[in-house]
Length: 239
Ligand SMILES: O=C(O)[C@H](O)[C@@H](O)[C@H](O)[C@H](O)COP(=O)(O)O
Image 1 (cartoon, helix red, strand yellow):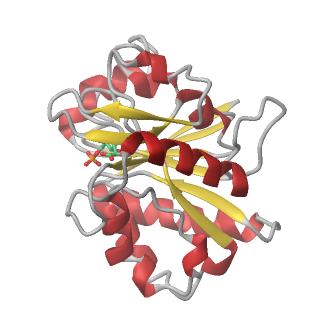
Image 2: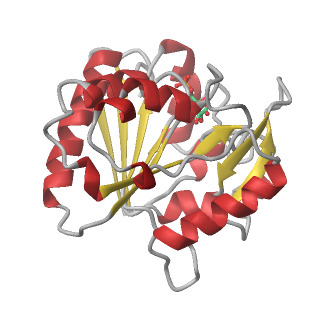
């Protein structure tokens, strides 16, 4: 297992640093079909903008199948939709077949959608000997409370769930979400956290130093074989 921490001056530098590493990594991937799970929230927006502009012609997007590490149970045109953000910022601007975009149907019944999305993942993503999907790349963020994907503190049953995805409930807003589970996050062949902002610095230090337990800080549960933290100086202040 290798865990690397990369520090950049600010959020824009984190996005451009990851985008450059992503392009280098993509160039080494010989397989025709590459599966990627995207994170939501605001942090990846700068990356998506780069993908939709500077990198739009530099990547053969037709070889990539995009999924989401988690999605809010809202309509795709809702401003809260992780798919809606990615669609507006880059998916609509690059040459990628519609069938390569595997969004969570946020408008559907969450329990029915959980099963449908799980089956869609099984239909496209390599699986390991224990039938756990192995995404080629998983991009994650971290909340100020140490959550990742939509696995929130004290919902650690999702860290060890035998299912590929679960229906989670945001502890403050009660918003339902579909989230990949801990075993899937840890089976990612390559996992990258993109985390920025001083308001996450204390929690991030505990996550990286393994000082907090995963029940309090679910992000600390992620121990993939190839794990890289892309951080700005503000969030890395306590490292
Ligand atoms: O759907 C989501 O909200 C995300 O997947 C979530 O895990 C996100 O990565 C963190 O909450 C950080 O969000 P920010 O990037 O907005 O700080």
